[in-house]
Image (cartoon, rainbow, N blue to C red):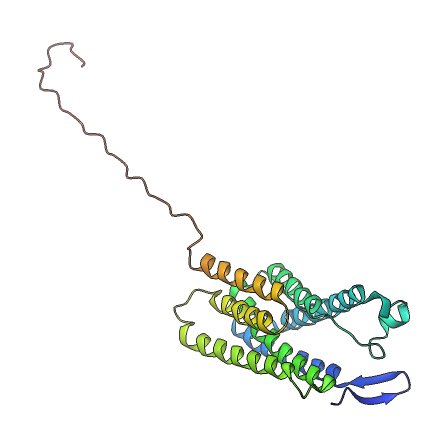
Length: 241
C-alpha cells in the first residue's frame, strides 16, 4: 500500500520502519510501567529495553543477510538498512529474548514477573511490526498480516484478563506459558510449522515445570523410633548390666 513514505536521495523512510519505531516506543513504555510495578529502577529498565532492541535488530539483519546472501553481496547493501531493508523474524525474536533474559539475570530481578512484563512489551512491538508489514506489502487478496495482527491483539487481551484475574493465586510463569502457546499457534497456522511447534512444546514444558509436574515426587521416609525394653532382672551388687 505505502511501502515508502518519504525518499530523499539514498535515504528513504519506509512504513515498516515507522511502525517498528512506534512499536519500540510504546513497547518500551509498557515495559517501563510494569517493571516499575515490580520495583525495578528506571535506568536499568530503559537500558535493558534498548540493549534488547539493539541485539534484536542486529541479529535480525544478520539472519536476513545470511538467508539471502545473493541479494546482500556487499557491505553497502548490508549496512544501508534504509536503502536495502530486510529483517528476519526469527533473528529478531531470538535476539530480543536472549538479550532480555541475560539482562534480567544480570540485574538479579524477580525472574518470572520481569519476564512476563517483557512478554507484554514484545507483543506490542510485534503488533506494530505486522501492521507495518501490511502497509508495506498491501496484500489485499489475503491480508494474512492483518490476521496476524488480530491474533496478537486477542492474545494480548487474553493475557491482560488472566493477569488481573489469576495474578493473586497463580504461580509466576503461567502467563509466559500462555504467550508461548498463543504465539506458537499463530506461527503454526500462518507462518512456520517448526517454530510454532517448538514454541507450543516449550510452553507446555514450562507450564508443567511451573506447576511442579516435572519435579520428582519426594517420598518422605518415616523415622522408626527404637522401642526401649525394660529389663525385669533384678540387679545385684557390682552388677552394671
